[in-house]
Structures are given as C-alpha cells and as structure tokens.
Image (cartoon, rainbow, N blue to C red; front, side, top):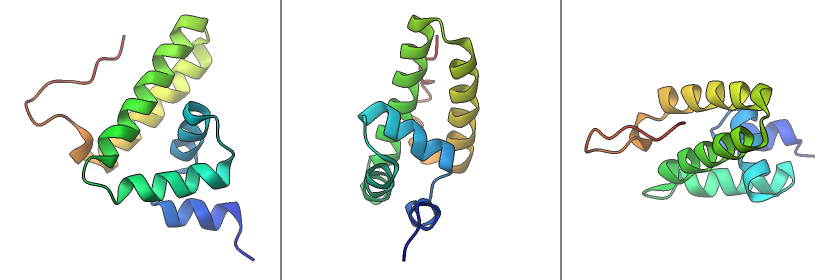
Length: 97
C-alpha cells in the first residue's frame, strides 16, 4: 500500500510544501501530492507553486496569524532554494509583504 509519505516523496516536494498546496487549494494531502507532482512536471508549474505559497503568506498576514506566516516564509525559502527556476527571469523578486 502506498502511504502519504510515499506520495510526498513522489511529488518531489517537502511535506510542508505539499501542506501549503493542500491549504491553498483546500485539498486533502493525497490530492495535493498529485497536484504537486503534476505541477512540477509542467513548464511553469514551480512558478505556480511559488505563487500559491506567497498567496498563503498574504492570507495568513491578513488574518494576523504570525506563526503561520513564519512557517510559510520558511517553506517559501526552502522551495526557492530547491527550485530556483520558480523565480522570475527578469530579476523581479516575488512580492512578500
């Protein structure tokens, strides 16, 4: 039987990155794993995942949930470090307020 941990490993992302996708898309973990794996195979999929994490950070800021903001900032840093192709080519930095 395939476990959620196996699915996360197949996605190529960390558990926290998958959880960020799950939260953003309102999906259970297994579905978020499948979406993550699909997006990572798409030409601009890593950019879409970065946008999801940034959206989640902004939503947490609006709610005043500073603990979740901190967690998501760590998730974003890790994702960008592991997937630098997700950054805009023009040198623009993702907006994180």
